[in-house]
Image 1 (spheres, rainbow, N blue to C red):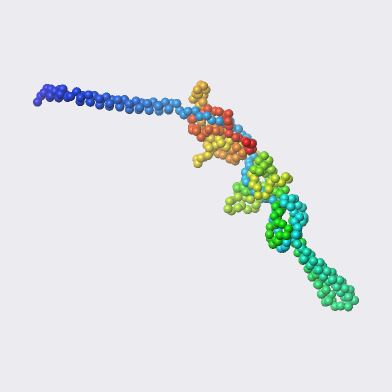
Image 2 (cartoon, helix red, strand yellow):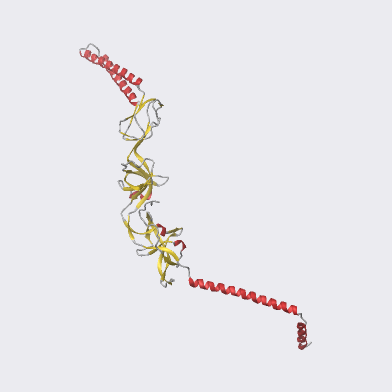
Length: 396
């Protein structure tokens, strides 16, 4: 079969196809072409968006900033202390008995030696008088024996026996006087009484708590410090404290004693301080916030504590540095630059920066959570975070 014959047969076969099949073929071709155009357009759009975003960069973020300066810094240590009475005791009697009279009243100030509670003691006083009479008789007999001994009317043994009897009678009188004294509850020192909850006619046993007496001017405060500060704490060192019962008042005191050992459980050092309390506002059992000056005054770069971001890799701040990008107004934009810093002590709203910053650096103080290196910045300092070394509660 020749080539011309084959070509002729193919033409005849195409000419014999139905018009319907031709339309289907053209329709399928059109669909494939349309799908290709759609896919190509989407790919083109994605590429162009990525190219635009890469050229445009991150959008500007609004932050507040401050210029870093060196400030005088008195190193301080904060602690929580518990108030303790200068002298304080729960009073009770050594003997049992029935309460005869109560001279004390709840909440009054009493002097040392003042009678507070009197127990029934009539029988004991009567016995004391009897013993005193016996002692007087023994004294008379002893004096008589002494005179007779001088003229050798009696033996030395008889005189010694009367002398020993006199001393025994006198000792019995003193013992009975001590027993009678135990029937009277006396203030052991000057102070303020607590709540009197006993009544006349009530029977009390030895050791029963009858009332409390506290000397609270001055008053002690006990607190602890980490062992690494042991060398910096000295006796008579001045401290300041605040109590939430009096938020607008500050009290002052001084270190009165330092424990000679470290607590092995907490590795803390026990400190006792004495605080003047003339108005008796501070009460035993209260807790107070203590600020203790440690070491000499120094100069540190300081920041608001909100400016520092803490994470497992270290402490981070963002600097606001110049860039070549322009804002809508045509002026150059600042951009964020991340830097690591070494932090030190804190006081109030502030934190000391030991390294990583220098005076004159512009630091982002708020809004840094949405920043990364190179983010354009818009500075708005109409509202800034607290930066007070001694903040005080604000009235609502």
